[in-house]
Image 1 (cartoon, rainbow, N blue to C red):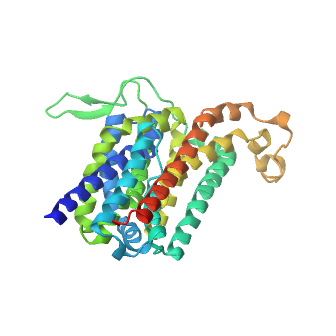
Image 2: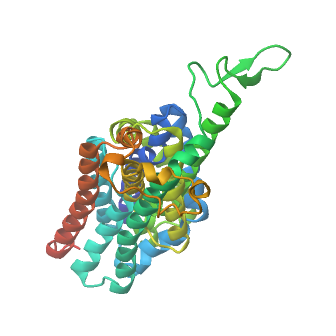
Image 3: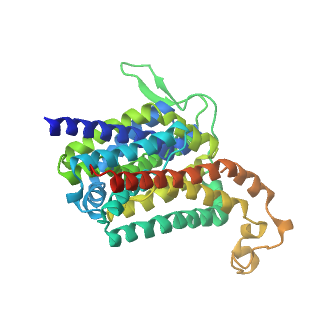
Length: 381
């Protein structure tokens, strides 16, 4: 009877974690799209729920096995320790969601499990070192890839994919005939419709990538303890993530879509594609990584690349007698492109960015330290 009650408590804590995962990750996935007015917050929550679940169900199983048995041997995940680990994950994420900052879910989850491993001297240092290495490398890759795009290719992409957002609804229903049919809104151009839909599709891709990495955080300890199978666990996470996305997720959408950045459509596409591709690739190799930090550094990198663009970098090599783009760069500060700096200022707010990055690293540290202290000094575990 006691085990049955503990199992119910474990499921409740897993739902609590999934609830906060949904509230945190929706800001990363749909904040840029919402900031560009490409989707409503309610629509974002619905799409987030489906895409996240799909990512966890397809690619995310390997990450569940990593967090449920590779960082710390699965034998250390008793029903009691699983509940405590999940509690610290959920609590840390909840505190971050309260202040409207999307925390690093994977770092928080891995940190809590690492706290158990350190306290019990069972931490697999080879696995942990591999994870930590990618935690350092992946945000750097995201920053520089986005910075290169922002500095050298953003203007050309903007010219090729220029989309003017018009007032009024994107689509309307044509009620002539027996069945209503969707049509473009009164002021909507075909190019605007295609571009906006592309932003939403890429946001769904980001939510999918979040599911591949973060679904494990809510169920890995229970799967490692053998008290919950992966398939019903992923279904449970999907429901919990949806609850979080529809409720507290509105705050993190506002932070990522309005406070951190007022994201143009093209910038939203760049950030989502760069960060989601990195996360999905690493999840495919069973590495839990921080969707939030990768996406944040992609935003910062894109803004920095735009801010440092020079007039010389717009020089056409064919028009300069074969001079390469790098050779045509004008280093003189007086020849900086003022338009690039103005546009870059819209891509990120330095004060909000510093706050977000600080809290994204503080939350996992809190979960790690708290888990270590509990498992080290409470003899019941």
